[in-house]
Image 1 (tube, helix red, strand yellow):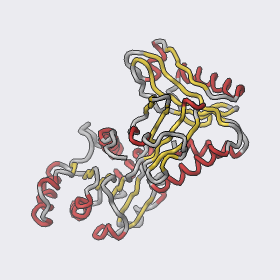
Image 2 (cartoon, rainbow, N blue to C red):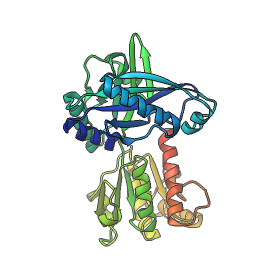
Image 3 (cartoon, rainbow, N blue to C red):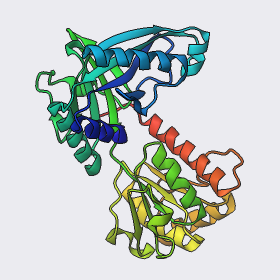
Image 4 (cartoon, rainbow, N blue to C red):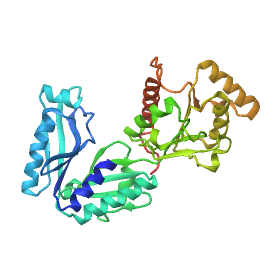
Length: 341
């Protein structure tokens, strides 16, 4: 979504009008595409997808009509068997789509994209809100910002969740989607697995910082999509990074000794995930060292996932990276219901 908002800003500033197509939900089975977006201009699709196939083709045609009429609209697509398969639905149903018209040089939309980029850069939990009852007017919400549209009810933040949702009550009809999450992934070790892991995690929305104590490995050319690449002293990681409870940590340094040193400093930070690469034998040895030499309790050590990743019989660095990414996606999904915003 971050890239799409940048594209939106650039095209609006050029004086183009746009349509943001959003899959809201479905009646029947909810599609995997709920929360998918596609940005359309007069020359066609600019960014994103709502699932491909016949539904996307029909949505593109409708978006062109919206550009001509210069007015937002909602539409429910009645799906046939092929459409259902395109969207990954199980039992069928109608897909609800909203077409948000954005006029050329729309100052409110441009301001929103700039504010969203600041929030992305600051690592805030950020929601995009679309007021469907008032023509699809956009606003943002974060703890730091509050609700940028002061016409929306003050209690709305208490209803927000991590998953895309449509909130209807007392005449209010809001589509709300979290587009940025607090928390970064700290990857300790820039070797073969780290080089495969970072781009996969970045592609699925994790913000990655990769770290190594070897300058030749802690090199931006190996990690062009990482948020940061740092050469650090593994014995004193707090000199370079500050790890918080909402962060994820992947430990895959060049040796058991360094893995142990990093874990000993990371465990007290209580990040939401600590994964350490290695065999079960190696993991057991490191656990015993952490218990005997560093005084960690069994409860503290149980917070460490090792061997890291889902058990899919992965062997190559690329396969191991996929198994780790899958496990982290699972962890992120399990944390989907916000206890406090």
